Length: 94
Image 1 (cartoon, rainbow, N blue to C red):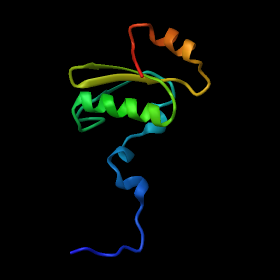
Image 2: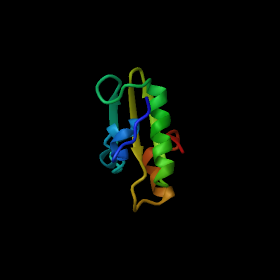
Image 3: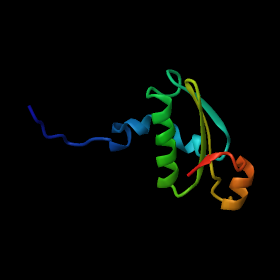
Image 4: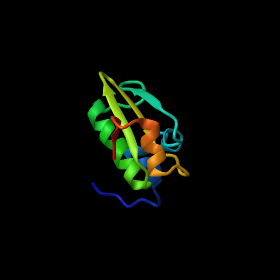
């Protein structure tokens, strides 16, 4: 039966809230592993990373290897050209 709530923390109510996006989007290169760092399939996580990048208006580079996803976000102060140079022309970017 439906119920009226006095409040709800929507920041933690969504699946993406479980990920440390602030840390992960700092411009470092990260490798995360299914079952340890995320629960969805690696290609789904890759898509979530790209969506997160577009939400914060930054490019991403991602790569899936087996159960792991390696990725980086464009740094806040990094130009598009510098990002592409850093990740290489072969990097999958969005």
